[in-house]
Length: 234
Image (cartoon, rainbow, N blue to C red; front, side, top):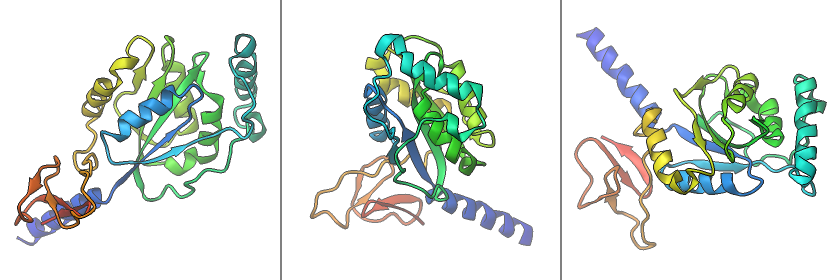
């Protein structure tokens, strides 16, 4: 009996811990395609969002056949362990990744590689993602994403990667909402973590909702519910 109670308590603590787990979406967007992807993703899951910006915002990476972008990528490829090889980025708005159980990286593809700006962020912070669940969404015109996946795993070697990455390109970009839904299902994104807080009116401060967003007449006697925009369990 004692062993059973211990097991149940352990399961309950794990479940409660998952209730407090947070997701962070980190992204870089040059053409705003990745920005649009993040907007769609954020409408489907409860997440914090952080955009990475280059320190030099005057660069036109696509100019002269992506000459500048290619130069940045070649510098990284030549010395991937040297911080000086990576282009400078602005200070990030979130410096502590400890509260986040899951991190989703959204990045463009540059010449079959991860965009240099995102590589800079991961070079400096990838080690802080050790043991966390990491997902990857890649935006490209038409090129496959295997090189970007390799870059991510080089820069974040100790993460627990989801079973597959999501590739959004010019041929399927208009269907990104459905693609993201299918991807979240395919990677078994945790149902509790994925609860989206329902929108409430300013005067509706004590409403009770189911995880799916359905209004309840009162707090349930058991199970999961949402009140004041926060998840609760009984």
